[in-house]
Length: 88
Image (tube, rainbow, N blue to C red; front, side, top):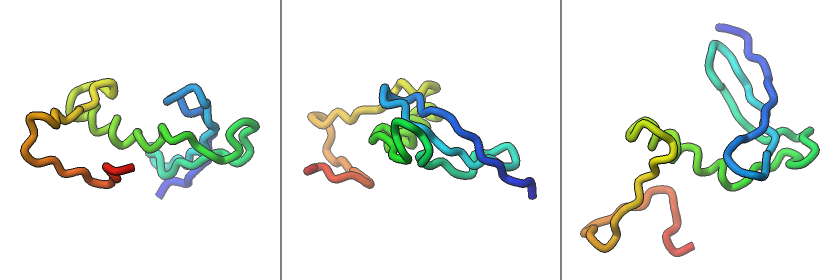
């Protein structure tokens, strides 16, 4: 197994420019968390990080992270929302 290493970068998803600490190993990203030593974000990440799984799945289905599926609620007989609170 290849040794892991830590790399630091800035999140490109929004204007907050949160600092990220990446754990890399074997050509893969093994972990991502907020960089505690970042001057601006101090280890916190903006809520846009929660959107990353949605953007990755959209890219795999539609070819780009910018194509996000939106359900047509008016024409939908059944809608299942997983991992979200529709009343929030």
